[in-house]
Length: 269
Image (tube, rainbow, N blue to C red; front, side, top):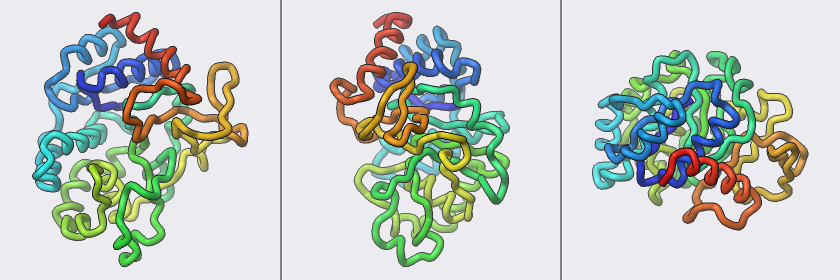
């Protein structure tokens, strides 16, 4: 499992670590630095037993600079691609504005080249491409996804695939990508779609798994401390995608607060 964080987003990342500790400590976790602002996160990683990546693959920052020359701060969001450089047969990448509720072990062993190359949790219909995508057959009916969670293998998709895809098709990418401070999500979607990867929803492959992850989901209930969607299917994690403030009054927020309180009790402010 891999995450990206720095001290600026510690208020999200440290509660994530607590949720991982309580539900998935048996799965090794790798922390990819967003930048060098890492004093608190390194201390937290040591407390939680998380491995901090020493050096991010330089081709990622080069690619980000080529694609987004005007956004030096935000383009580091592409550092999530270092998950594909880790020495792992399979990897789960997950954003840290998330907390985990269930064991993620069922998410391993599902990849099958040409049939299930890249697993995602939820679609993202509005935040990937603009309307020009329908001009291109390989994009018109593609499954657009939220890249805050994915499972893949560097034997199927590696960093060089991203470099080569953008070297060949950067002009097309910029023509179809959605603007509005979106950086990694269009890149990950486009690279998967351009290379005809078989993208599958985890809810199609894991019995009784929900594709619901959104923090404002309706009809959610809790059983034994873990959430169920309106149809009674198991929600594996909650994602505060697009949230502009820390959780306070929505349905999942008490659970987030419990993880946060336990986390800061371990780490200290």
